[in-house]
Image (cartoon, rainbow, N blue to C red; front, side, top):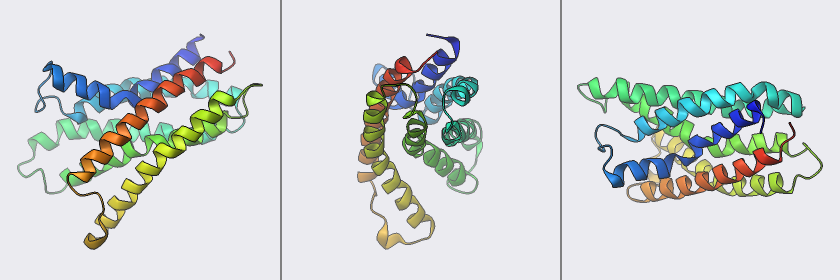
Length: 202
């Protein structure tokens, strides 16, 4: 595998945010207080962002629709920045539930939920690459299904932001359950993403 394809493969780390977070919490390697989901996303986000940015020139070379991969770059960078602010700013706030605490938290959540829809755009851009694109097509289908979960949660967040409280669907504990379901979906996307990378030309 070439260097640029390796960089693209490194990008998939962010899709495994849920198992990484779960392993760290269950094993007790890190405490839930000192190493929150924000810390986990900060680590995987930095690695994935660097890998993906390094692979953008490769994407430009192999796909004429490479620009569809830019939203994923934006989601990775936005999520990483939000995670950094979450672990560096929010703990120092006297009242974390007051601005800018909620803005930072919600921005990070939006970036996280945008991973699947933005990845779908990337797979669409890659669907015309090479002679056999069955793996990419299958990956796009799975990603679109996972995207339905994230889009539903994003719409719910928008309704909440507009103070349409009667229309909020994903309250506790349903919201946490949906996020776990989404995390399992992104993990599957990550695995399929690796399969796609193996099929890409040098």
